[in-house]
Length: 126
Image 1 (cartoon, helix red, strand yellow):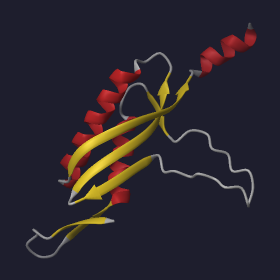
Image 2 (cartoon, rainbow, N blue to C red; image 1 turned 60 degrees about the vertical axis):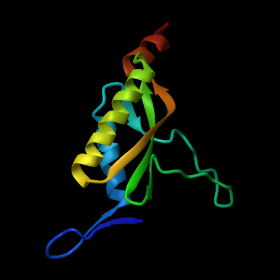
Image 3 (cartoon, rainbow, N blue to C red; image 1 turned 180 degrees about the vertical axis):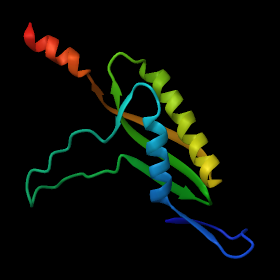
């Protein structure tokens, strides 16, 4: 789906939902405490196995108003509600400033928690 803006003087502007998703992903990665934008581990087992493949950022558009869902892996040690609120504000601001599209809601889905590599090595030595 694309948003069309016909207010331009010499043509039209179309913004793809993929562009909105990319802006959202980049804005989310700027937030301290976000390790990755990902739906988590979903291994593909075989050719005939039913696999649920979701995009890490989903954008729903209705009447030029976007509702965005971002799936993240949080960094261990950060307060998830604080990180989620900062992420939602960052995504909303970035999308509205860059595209002019109103964002009604940003949903954050935490699909995992990442532990720092140094912590894993310390645990393995014990």
